[in-house]
Length: 342
Image (tube, rainbow, N blue to C red; front, side):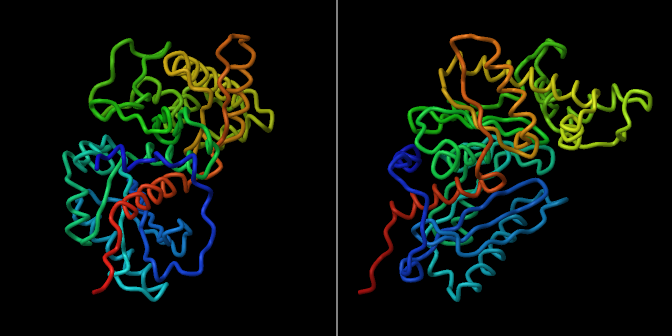
C-alpha cells in the first residue's frame, strides 16, 4: 500500500468525529505535532474523537531521540488518563516542521530551531512503540486537518497558508496532498517578491516572501519605520499586536497591515493562476488574525479579475496540525486491522 493510498482519499466521505461508546474496546491512535518550542499530542478513539491531550516543551532540544522519548512519555501519560496500556495503540502519525520524505519516513531538514537533517523519524517511532507510523510536514498535516474537519471540508482543491514565524503552504489537489517530487512543494516563503533581494535566499536564511509577511519579518518592518512621532504604540510589538493597532486606527500599523496584505494577495493570486484553486485557508499565529484576512480578501476582490479565490481563516486554529495527524493515523489503523485473539 502506497503512502498516497494511506492519505485522505476518503476525506470527502468522512464526517467530523462524534463520540462512540466502544472506543476502549477498539483501540486508540495518536496524533503528534512537533514544533521548535512545543510538542503536542492527542489520543483518539477509532472514530477520531479526542479523549486526551498533552504538551511538552522542546525549547533547546535538537536530538531526535530526545523528542522520541518525550513522545513516549506523553503517550504513557495519555493512556494512563484513559486506563489503557500501550497494547491498545493501533497507529501514530507525527508532523515535523520541515521538508519530509513521507514515502520513506525521513525528515530531510527542519528549521534552525531543531536542526534535523535526514532523520529516519518513522523508523524511530515504530521501533520505540511497536506500531505503524507515518511522518509528514506539519503544514501538509494542517491542510489535511482542514480538509477533513475544518474550513475546507468538502473542497477537493485548496491551499492552506501557514503564516507564523515563517511562511509555508499545504496544497490539496483533487482531494490529495501534493508534496512535489523533492517533497518541497508549498515552500512559498522562498518566493521572490518586489522590494527584496532578486536572488534566492541562502540555505537556512528566511525567504524573500517570508522576510516580509512572516511574523519576524513584520516585526522587522515595524521597527524599521517606527518613531515616537509617528505612533503612540511601542516599538517592541509582535505581528498580531501590530494588526491589533491597525484595527484601533493607528496609521503606522495600518501601513504595515496594508503592505502585508498586498504581498499576501499577490502570492495568493499567483498561486491561484498556477493551480486554479478556488479556496485559500489562512492559519498560523499571524494568518489567523482577522484583520489580515479581511484586508487581503478586499484587495483580491477589488482587482476585478476573473481569478477571485475565496480566502477563509482556519476553523481549527492551532489544532489543524493535530487533526491532520489524527486523520493519517486513523487511515493507517484502518490499513492494519487489529489481530483478534485466538
